[in-house]
Image (cartoon, rainbow, N blue to C red; front, side, top):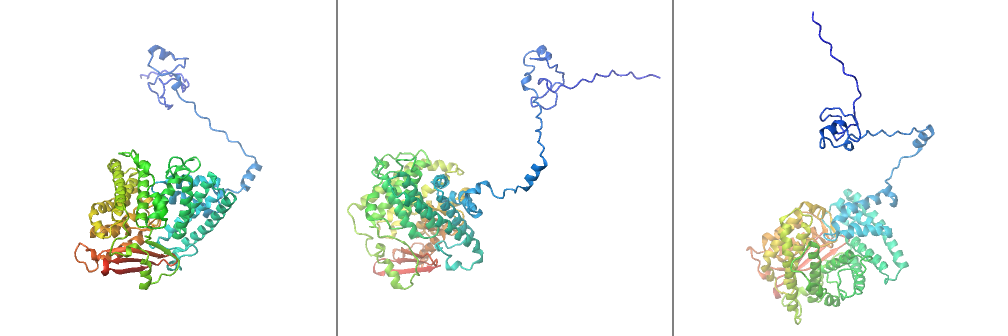
Length: 587
């Protein structure tokens, strides 16, 4: 028999785990690169020296030592019993500044849902400035909570009629609605928070009544802005308008002290105290009071229609960014709005709010037209003023200059429809186009003047469709949302009552009807009702596409009862002696 040779056994030597990368990967895994032995000589192993440079990277890239598990200290029996007896925390540490969970949730709702939609262009004041102000003045936190609770209530209620809600109780057409119990509770809580805010603001201002102190003036301006926002949210537009005027006066007194601007400044003298964002917010608040309220004095209109003349002379031929374009458009819009109010001698106030029941008699309707210059449609809307048409053309030229400087920026935004600033770019274009149309018709006694602006109407409708169809639009135009700025409702309403093209008019009304949201004093649903009423009046008995002058209607007034939600819109159809009155009432 042949025996198999016995193989020589290799000596058992411990594996090397701290050698150079010639043996192991740089990542530290136990996998050989060349499956060779490292003798661990220092500073370099023998094999590395033999094969020369480049064969190995050295020891510093070798395996990392394994982390030793942290030894946990054993607890004594007494310590374990103490931990068991100690109750687990039930409230988030951030809740310590809030009185209860509901206040915390409303505050969070403001930060996450309400604040992003409160402004289309000046979100920093609602996202940062006001929240920072709560650190120095804790009572401002109650105002933030109030806004959050009211916005939360509005979204939960999901109602279509957004004209009316009493500050003390829900309107009659919502009482007894079981589905609104959560909203009713939220509104009651909002009023409690509002009372705390007003009490704290009164104490703060009464103890330091000297408004010459710029810090005290800043506090008063913030309080005024919050009051206007809260009263507008509660549909108390008359109260909001009164406080808006007080805030605008207070801000103007401060701007009058800014050297070199003649009181027409758009930035702050002490920006470290009264921020530029706060100044700009009050400038936009002025636009809200001018949109359809004839509320400022003729002296104000005479002065502010010339606001920023020196600034407009430096308007560039091409805007560098969206912020620069917005700043110049704000100046152009304020000047133009004040000019139109000046041209109408402050007599126009289409929108009126009451807390009493509206009468339905023809006598009451005629009374509401008595002081409205548009009621006399047989001749000119206003007495001719020397040079008024020249001044109108000057303002129209300013709008054209702005549009030309904005055109490259607008075309650039169209190339990338997903840009974050695309919505704001569209809004600026909508506002400038709408301003052009309204200025052109302000001095005309004939509604036929608007027939030449069909391209402008088409552009407003098209851009509004793009705004509502944009993926980010739900952050700003969600159903039940509220914005403190003027967005697209007012321009769409202008299209629906001034454009007689049946297709464009119905497209504008359809956008207003698509969802229910609010922008300052304007609501999409009431604006839709007004538009449908005017369209029905004008198209009654007209079978052709063209609506003749005798069938066209002028919007005379809109009166709203804030207690019952009842609204009445009045118009005059025709011209001269053949003019007839029409009105509609709805809840």
